[in-house]
Amino acid sequence: MNINKLIRFSFSLIAITFLIPMLASDAYGQKGLDGEEVTQPKKPDKKPSVGKGLDDGAETNNTKPKITGKPLDDEGTITKPERIEVKPKSETIIRIGPSIEKAPTSRREKERRIEKPSELAKPIQQETDLGPEYPEMSTLPTGTFMMGSKEGQENENPTHEVTLSSFEISKHEVTNHQFRTFVKATKYKTTPEEDGSAQTWNSYAIFGRARYPVVYITYTDAIAYCKWLSLTTKETYRLPTEAEWEYAARGGTKDQPYPWGTEIQVSNANYAYDDSRKAYGEPILDYLKPVGSYSPNGFGLYDVIGNVAEWCLDGFKTDFYKESPKENPICPDQGSARVVRGGGWMNTTSFFSVSFRKNQPGAYKSSSLGFRVVRVIKSKDNAPVATTTQTNDVQPTSNNAQTNNN
Image (cartoon, rainbow, N blue to C red):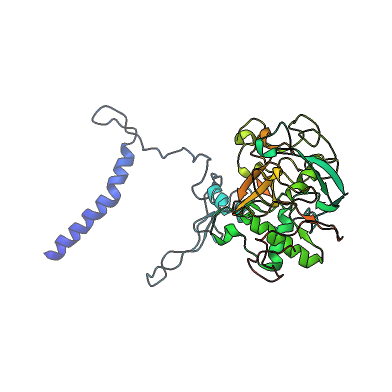
């Protein structure tokens, strides 16, 4: 009986499998229960549209890809799939699936990979316009002039006659390059450097400013440079006396406040022409100018007025003119005060006459204060002796020595 049931069940399955579709196909064209004609379902006839693919932006097409390979082997194990390639009618090969090439780099990634200019290797730069290694000198003849000014301050009086022996004075203020030569040779450290100041000659003497006047130099530092220069050249160098400075600054003129005449213009010198430091803008590095930026005076000297004020050898005494010697005068030490002449970039015109006298402590430093040097012409009647503060020698290999100008 079980066998008969099994046979009947098998026939039922066969009928369901084969007969029902046949009956359904026969029904096509007949009316259904709702009165509508029974039709055969239509296959989609819309072809794939041509557009962008999902992989790398390649164009797709209507060509059916040829798929090769099989996901399972004979034992049912999953094997590594072979690459599936779509070969359209054109010669372009479109790869579907993992690419053996690195994915295209995004624009942002490319920008990140571009090295910034600051990260690129920079060529080593060297300054080519250093100027002379040692100061260039101008010889001034023996001469007599009237020192001081009746129209000036009280300490510029009385005017008095002074006679000076011939001497040589530097055409320019000592430059960064010239002072750096001294420092390299001696390992000298300036007073501000020893004191740990942030304002030093070296913090200012940056690349490209070799021909600018050296600043942030104390009186002691200027004396040390002169002593080294003397030892190096076998000549005698020192700071100019106050009388020598005024004689040199006048440039052979008489009874006029400036080397070029009676009035001052912005074309004559570097000074704060509108009574404000901001007249030159910022930063401070832009205030100074290279030495020789303006026309020289009658003795061929540059920047005796403006740019930077200049240390002189003398001590300072307000009424020294009342007792000043007639020949080669020099004021002896008067404590720490030292004569400063010429006015700097931050000063106004009231500081700029050739007779104007000012003083600062020997330890004073400023971005508008430098110096120039005198070279003694060897003769019996020559030049002033040293002041008492100039007693220590500076050797070419010494550090922080001072100088002696005997």
